[in-house]
Image (cartoon, rainbow, N blue to C red; front, side, top):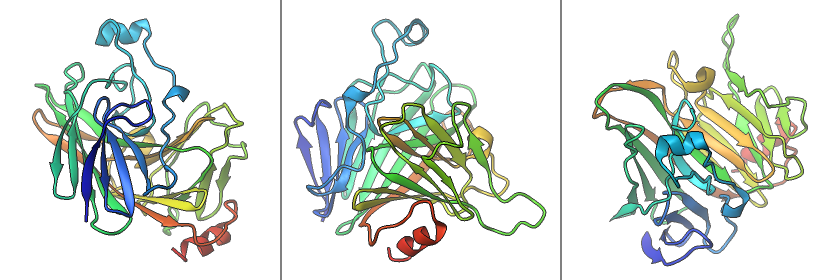
Length: 310
């Protein structure tokens, strides 16, 4: 059974709403954001990064000229809704104001202030299963401008450092044609030992001793990735890349970024022309399980053996 309670203060994030079924719990900020700032088994480790002090603000002249004096953007950590393609300062909306929320039977809907400067309004909904380690995260972005807008909904889970992300790559036989998209950002060093590419899996390890970031994108027919953190596995499922569909950043339905502080687990909806008044939706399914055995994250067979036991 899902229960919901108000938290007066969580770390340095202020008021939150706690949604739990006794197995897992999710904390969502309501003084700022919204961010899903905690996700984990009840009383156990937080899968998401909640170290607000690790992230500096963006508040340069270009930013304040666009949004207004004394406005700033903070990463905050946790899970957030963005809009792709990324652009500055438009993408970096200063969402540091109170969030409206409505409690539902098995979760809640969180509605921040509309982004009039960008012509969009966002909402975040959580639907938690009654008695297991699963929940849905539903992200909606409405075009509130008077013109058509081209965008994709972008769900970004800023996750706790110290784990390894498993990305099952496309393995379908396409004959003489390519069977996968891999996008690489210019600051990424593919020879760095945080990265592994096998024939079936790619993995990315978060390592706090590296300050140079890495960002990669994939199309992903399977629509499933796994973040292994200590003894837990965070599984994120999302819509698979549609054949012939248009996706941001060269065709990516999934992206990941890491630096010394965290690793991001990101899904993206199809890049569409959204008419005035219409809403685009991205749904992720989150689940947690205990890691069934150790694995060598630079060996496809070892990864297979672990995932087969889930």
